[in-house]
Amino acid sequence: MQTPGRTFVVGVDATDEGAAGLDWARTALDDGDSIVAVHVWDVASMVGLDDAATIPAEEMGAVAERGLVEFVERLDDVRVVPAIEQGHAGRALIRVADARDVTAIVVGHEGAGRASLVLGSTANHVVNHTDRPVVVVRGERIAAPDHIVVGIADHETDDTGANASIRALRFAATHWPRARIDAVHAGSIDVARRAVDLAGLDTDVRVDATATRDEPTDALIEASGRADLVVVGSRGRRALAGLLLGSTSQALLSGARCPVAVVR
Image (tube, rainbow, N blue to C red; front, side):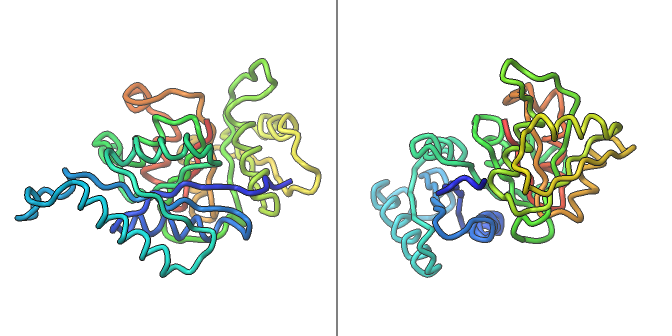
């Protein structure tokens, strides 16, 4: 059954990535859901303007807020509400998400390669510093999640009988129960089937367990070319350690051809 009244926090700015994140959220959510469009401003972002030093910070904030409100009004979408924040973009998005106890955080990211992650994008900060699901909108198209690929790993279950892959499956099936879901494991269809069984999904959810001989990252990046959303679970490694050790999640964020959801 779909979670009623989903709320997504979406980072918006003047970039194509910000626009893509909001476009995806509006496409992925239904009537009755909510989208908090968060624009984050800071004095540092004004560097390079000749008169920046003469503009009081409160006036900068007021200008940013008026611009956001006008932008949201032009959308004419009752699901979208504006929220203005000051400071570091990644930290601000997490702060808003925690204060409102939202379903997921949505950010845009079009960087390619490991360097784009190490250099510290907003997307990378959010993924590595929140316990909430994060949807990183990237790739070649924006579409409702009608076909979802969930990456399955060989993780042991915890005391609750779940693991990262099972939580990823539940996230996909709960929020888009009408979607076609492929549970993909690199190597063993039995592992994929076991994850599906343990997830305890509603009987009307269409989910197929599949296996591939490719490496996990290669398999999911290849699958992202035909999917609307790829979902992967994370066991919780964060910040610099997660980057230095490497992970399927991090590789997908720089190589996927559709949006990627990372579920902790």
